[in-house]
Image (cartoon, rainbow, N blue to C red; front, side, top):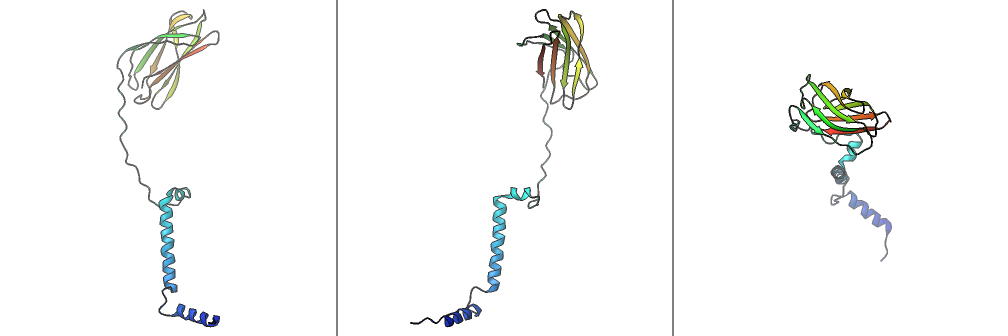
Length: 188
């Protein structure tokens, strides 16, 4: 049997042009379009983050439903007294009196702190840093009784900010030998 290439090519060409052909140009184009759509959908399902990086918007972003602020933890009311201790070398802060622990905005709050110098050192300064919901502010304390070596220091603060979620006090005492001691109190 001899193969005639020209007759085979002619028969193949007639089949491609004929009505019995299942692969026409129209079905090929439609199939390619469906395949492209499937590839795009699969790509989006596998890695939508890659489209967000490019700045394209494929999916509409949902706006989160606002939720109410959490209820603040309750804290003590009225005067409070704390006994303090520090392990580090330097000034020793021993007793803290707070006349109004939970003041309202505009209300005065007085704090007194007993500070003792170590090894005969004199206390040269005591400071307070108050951190509240929206503010951080420093205040100097002044010696109101006793001596620079062992005395009571006081500060009066007018409350300027709410302290519903954040309420911390940091005391720093420095002595004349250059040593400082710090006490952090987290009330809320």
